[in-house]
Length: 209
Image 1: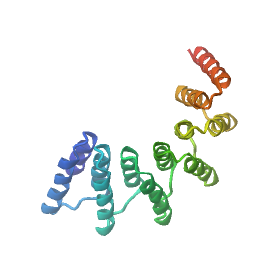
Image 2: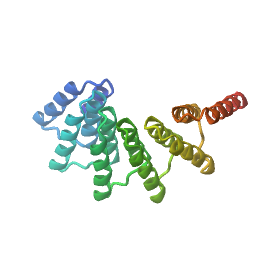
Image 3: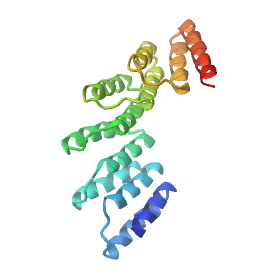
Image 4: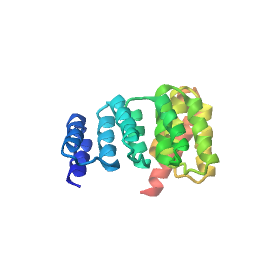
């Protein structure tokens, strides 16, 4: 327990080198690392932008017969996000299905973030549809990153379709949603709709205050 607590602390502080050293000390002290240990170190590597090392540790878990649960996948997905590694993120989603670890909102949302950072708006939309088909919850954050992915690539009409879909699905819109949609409209030259969204956002803020 003490080793795991230390590994988690190092992970939170992005001290991945110390976390790796701790992992090796456990082996030398004949204290077998477990899923919690590896997940904490992987998380630390991801936060410190050492995504390649995170993947090495993930493979090491498999080689050592250590269970790679959903939290381990979350840690690796986080490494993909900080390192803007789209294709490894997409491969992870595939591997999760093959390993019978059910993909969830967190893992899909992370992959969509990678899509946005990589300019792959079409893949982002495909992932959103896949979530719908597999009955995975699409939260406000999920839609926000999807809208952002479309806006960044100049696909303002697709962004507005997601905006409208949130309304029909009764998914709460927030300030980030509105800002992303407004940005998409202005990038697409639709200043009239952007102004309409701004007024709607202002009214929502006033009504909730």
